[in-house]
Length: 382
Image 1 (cartoon, rainbow, N blue to C red):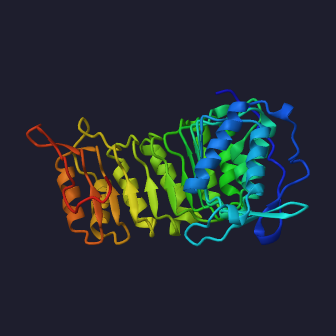
Image 2 (tube, rainbow, N blue to C red; image 1 turned 120 degrees about the vertical axis):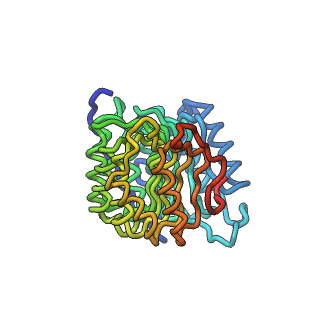
């Protein structure tokens, strides 16, 4: 991916009554019909809004947003009165303020965008303003499969730079996107180091394209984050043993060391030397309750000797009192290593969920044994 300049951040919103943001002068709500460049986007907004009124979830799929479509979404928020929409689960309505009057609507707590993009840079800026306007009600944002140029590219649209100003988010997912390149790494670093998104506790970057250029800045961001994360999902990053060591080092020297409860490293490419690093992870991350290592080990062709690092890992599996869930699905492990691991896990009375479904073990007689079900304690996850 070619190097590009990091795009400027959108203007910061002004927060009004109740912690909600008022619309800036640059947001023009009076639009002409001639300005509606994309009928498909407007139709998508209408469909999404109708679903939201029925289900309480605002989702968009394969939508190309222009400024008119986002303005239409904003106007729908303003136009709803409390009497138009019954409250759900006793939740209080969110208030949107303008210069003339107040409007109320059900709180939008979660937004999901799948395979969406933006017509131009102003549309992306309008979208960030809209997210900020929703205020503390917005807790979750899922960005799935957005083309890379709309995160960091020729149109200078860096959504993550804007999202860091959506200050009340607690959960952010950015899945199936291209995060490669030094520029994207610095965007992620700035995002993680920002003090404005201190409420963010869960971060997910599953099945993204990554490379070495973005990895070091990303790790620096994790290490220097001012507030700790409770969950980090990196499924599909294909981390090797060295990259795992760098990640663990960043985590144990970060504010997340005493807060991280869940870590997903599924589909990594770990060798037998990774066991020492995993032992350090279990030893130092004192709040870790869930560790997902599905499809991380393919050791059938490697040396079966039990290393000091593996012995440390087994000891941690026996004695660790914080770990509640361990996932080893689809891992391929040699004997006697597999037997030692499973025996250690059986001795850990704190472990509540162990899933080894699909684990392939090479026995001493060179025959494969594949586990179809968990060896101990039934899994709670389908």
